[in-house]
Image (cartoon, rainbow, N blue to C red; front, side, top):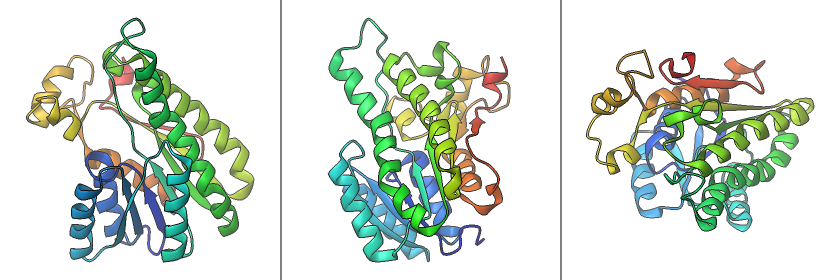
Length: 256
């Protein structure tokens, strides 16, 4: 308990999956959590649960691909908490279309959320972190930014967007280390979340069965809390000398 005591954290895509797990975990660790998502009703319900369990959290609507939407979130965060210490750029989408199958609209939609959204988030919070004299940004990439094959789920735009996040993270880490702003990326492998459930996969073990030849560590697919714990480490002062890294959470998939 208390690893993020009194820190203010903005988390995107917090209504479900890895973002929700992070919001719940960060609140337990003492953070004031600004949970954001484009899905407001579900987000409100989840944030109410966090507050009922003793956490300090607010729910704000955010379209990560819209600069004005980001500004509203920043303004409300500062009005409520007066500062921003942590940003977790978790929101993302996947469209399972390859180079030849994808249409331009598919490409632009994935890139706008997965990559432009990350850039806009960093652009919005960094001036406030500079004012604080410190900050931690955690960007969600993917093992699809590191390896090919089924790691990208057949999504050309997804693979490209996550590769861009990987590179953008390093660029930002280099340029803002002088301000004591740390910027790192997390690279999940197969993770059982609501997205997997929506695709018809009923349990973590069932998902793992599909990936046991790729990820050697049983149960061969992770769960949302595995990624939330990675976010927590990078967001916390335990990682005070860590910037620009790629924290891979994939059950050993990339060791192949």
